[in-house]
Length: 426
Image (cartoon, helix red, strand yellow):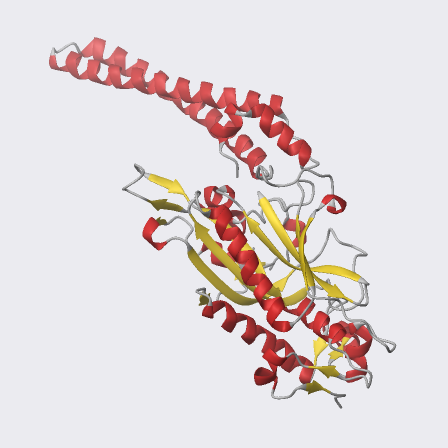
């Protein structure tokens, strides 16, 4: 959530930033609510001061034996209390409306985020690896996986619904191997691993800004809980309403979780295969950093995600998302896109974002640095996929397929898989 003082003092800049994000910010409505809020606060303070003065006066009158005057003063206090209750109710009403407005307002893009309308305006930062050139009729992962008996889309639909799938045999082992490989690699680079619930309450999802804006994209239980769309939700909220010590920053966390997304806003996109599904596995990275270091930590997080792809030998590129394409909470985002032969293009496999103090303000996550600042400051939160397991699996199947219809296992996965080739499964 944006700082109300920042919005008040930089209203034109906020309006422009929202325009760059392809949305609007009602400056007049904000000003109206903000002025009403400040007026209510001023009225409350004035009434409280008058009530305090009158209460002291009543004590004096009682001490002087002036009972009638004291009773008259008490009646004035009663009327003041009624006015104070009305002023407080008005402030609470305006506060709620102003908070709701800011809760649905996205983050301000960082000054280094390129300005653009959509994904077509995302500049490429770098590439790694060379897409394979096949001298045989290569297959898409949805066909090859089915032929090998490691992916079963029909039974996924039978067990659940469309956009679910079943992995069998070496397909299930590949999923498990990728999870373990990714988690092992990140922990070897200083990330602390967590195991967290797959369900979250509304406060947790509000803290990372999935609520209230994106409720339609979440799976909700009958008792008001939600299936998590990413481990970012849980890892970030581990420190909700806490004050951290600057000596402990940056904190680097990772976790494997199943992720659930209804994809309500993505109808018709990537309907084949395992690229866009309702349930998928992901190893997530989260960082807590000081404002001075968060951009540097973002660059390092991108390197950590790239390291996974490089170890797997998968060609990819890094792009910087423009203002019209960054996520709601992000001020700056890099996407890693892996090469998928079936698309003849690069497809997103990781998104690494610096959310600045946007999430920390919602979740009330602060840190203390007594040598440099009085009181506390909001931390900066960062998150990134390290990686989306299903998409990594699809990339391995397609990029490592062989002329005989088998799949070569990347060298780093052989110890996890117990085999160097995926052959047809019964």
